[in-house]
Length: 116
Length: 108
Image (cartoon, rainbow over all chains, first blue to last red; front, side):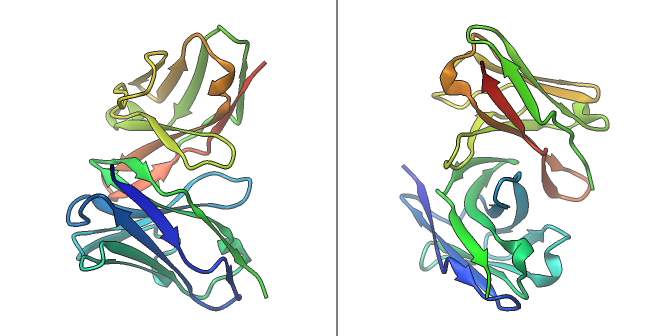
């Protein structure tokens, strides 16, 4: 079955750029909406945004000015870049597959801490 | 942007019925999905399109949506149902996805 796996640094310095990659195993990335969701420690879920067919993107307006989500079909991966991070960006970051409005497949999540 | 309100916590005895609400302005006109998240785990879809269950989700889990409230109902609650539950919608006008604040279900 299809599985998602996040990878990337667990520690990012303030003002730098957070970069994560999600690898898609067992299925093609050429369909569905490929999404990032985050969860600060002890808090709720926050939708970050998606990339669809390596062209169409939609971002959470609160993050839009710092955010980029891209898809690499040759590697069956999609990526998140969030610039100018602060401690408020510390969270568990999940990659997920959106299927017609709901998230039916999730990665295990990766904790990213913003600290000097 | 669209806001959905969930109670922070719900408590229920084993074998009883738990109802978790998700309030929003005319939420009945939107399609609501529900996720279960156990400690240290990723969320898992338990209800989609207001009332549908993914394969593998017990029939004890059901959903409804009308007016200003969507509800996740868990019948014959078991200790293993203890988790955080989140509602989620696709906000059509903005094309944004929105989560409720989450509800912690405690099994007494």
